[in-house]
Image 1 (tube, rainbow, N blue to C red):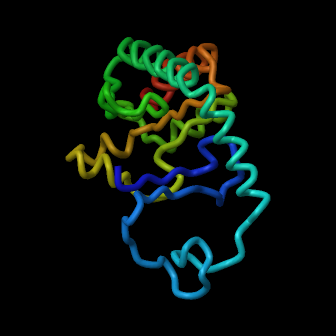
Image 2 (image 1 turned 120 degrees about the vertical axis):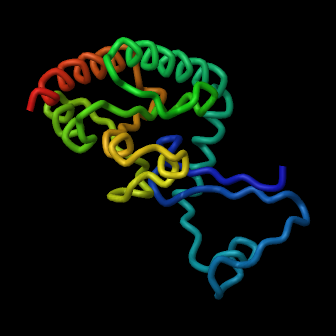
Length: 184
């Protein structure tokens, strides 16, 4: 492996901390010009409290990664099976994709409309990744999906606080929302 990056917020750290691994002698240029921090790749004062938080989270998550992965896989499977029972719902995430995320499209309902409907029931999902908020999904577009399918896409993320009851509540909310919103 030449490199990998991780975001601390995926381990419940504050947003704004991450890590980059580079294989020994793997060369990349600086992101910004300036100081010599981070081996000359990025200038600026290092955020020591966030770095310590990321280190502690990495130690904790490293010890429990397999049970967390198994739990996410089970929740993802539960959601996929429940979505299969909802008429017209189309899965956009392939079965072999990350178990921590599931993307699907709703027939005849815009994702923003369903998001607001679910929020009224205190169920929170998203219509895309946080890094592309407000824009059509580059991934779904690259997959060649038609605009109405992209416009009706929802993204569900799982973490260690997600439960089977959360998935049941989401499926019930989707079922009710589809019935209510498709009539309009």
